[in-house]
Image 1: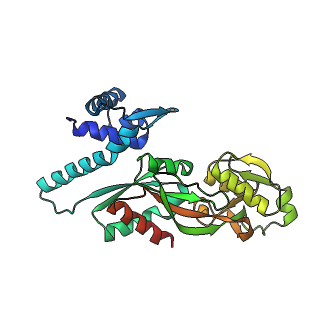
Image 2 (image 1 turned 180 degrees about the horizontal axis):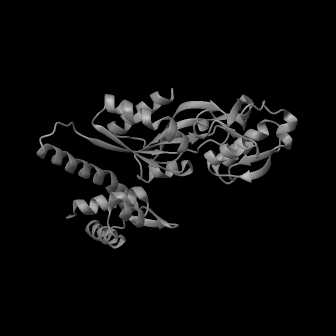
Image 3 (image 1 turned 90 degrees about the vertical axis):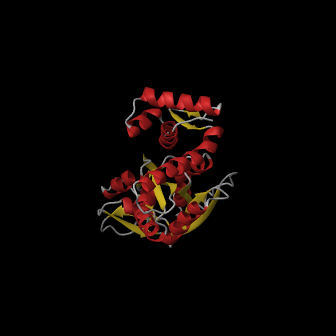
Length: 291
């Protein structure tokens, strides 16, 4: 097989960004050039590398096989450049970590800092992934591992090609404007509520949590983004539920009143069943950060 580093670099960018347009912007190429690179690489491997899902692209089976190896080839090329420049370096491993909003705010800076101290040869590249899609991103090889969520009330089903471990547990609490006391049962039942869409895992877990409080929540505002839901709660437009880690996305205008009876969630680390040593090292550091 004969491919070029440019083709592999383009392939990795499309795989990680899910779009030829976004890959072109990232690499400074035209969309036509990206398309030509992918077409040439597809001809070399004699297999489809991507399949279309909605408006984006996801890896086909051949693409999932090629992605980690393409990353290794590009890392080796970078090491060769460093050697020719006479720089000191250790064998470098690139690990792509899937993150979502509150996990990014809470864990990512500490993970990168600790890895730099303990494993300077491991480079972590974060990629924001919708938490609902984190499992599929690991299975499809888009990321090497991901920080995800499991709700004991709506547990993740076993999935082939996926392994996960809980690294933290936290309870839901009621979010109210700063200084306001914890709402009583009558106020909870009569209040407007800010909830995620019911078709999302988070939405189902939130509705079970409000039911555990003994109320049938009035779903006034349906909001996907946690930061937006917290901001709306701060203006007094309604109540919502959150956890301490979720509150990292809030401003100073809201308070969290713990309610253990509402249940909670687990922060989990998702990997393949047989992760590489660098991936395992990153997973171990993530577990430490959330302790």
